[in-house]
Length: 399
Image 1 (cartoon, rainbow, N blue to C red):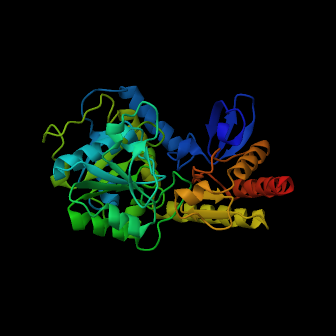
Image 2: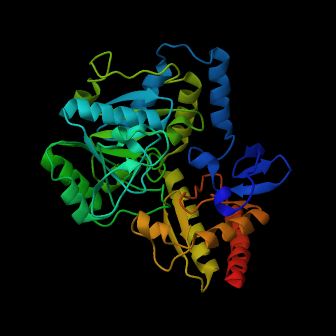
């Protein structure tokens, strides 16, 4: 909330598409716990599954049938996900993906993209410097320079920079969000995801898709599946746990069997595959059939088109895909982090404050995506657009 110049909300409860703070204010919620709640808050079937699981025990430190069922469901939706290893967070899953890639290739260097967030492990908390591709510098106090030194940061959608950075024989992996949503929603340029696959293959590196946000949201099989671009490893989270802490690493059998105890690459976590989170994930995925994605796409499109119209003459771009959108205060949609940072951040902050005052809770940062859900009705969208028209007008009057 500091980014938009106000104090945070403290939440009392939520239901469906609505969230209520401790002061009794009601909001239409487009944060939705930052993405896991594709079915909305306290969806009855998900709550029932968690309650039933909790009654049998909250944690065992041993395998359960639910983990197998969840892995089978992921494999049905995502080609190439032959085996899955559960973790409790996307940070752990991404960290494990890099460890596995380095073990498999015998190399150390990793390419990531400026503006992409893959969790807060030391080696991935890096930012781009100047030039086409530079050795990364730590982006947080406490991160040793040596930890970031094996990470090369490239501008998103920059074909030349990617080709230049990947032309090396010590590259272990390229890690990317196939549908980036951590600098706001910045779509991949035509052919760019295919180029990632091509460059990884050319030098014998692995391609890792971080689908913590996009997995099961933009498509039943995620953004990579929708684009027809296969990854060697998939990092999953958010919807996978249905609102409870769960994430996973998935991939082909040859790669995944390098993980202990079958192989020598160590990974463990006491609460990984927690039965409550597994139950919530299974119940959520059960709701996500073809009809659900048609509904979600319709809701997202109505919201995005309405926001574009509500902005009137303001320099505003609304970027959207199924289940995700971002409002940028710029005349054209950003293509990378630098262009996203050049948008009018102060205007977005003003816009968000005005929305909150009118009962709409949008992400309090232009660098986060909005998360429409299956619980958002046509009435919720219309309420949002009414608030947006007034909010845009207030921003225009202040400029």
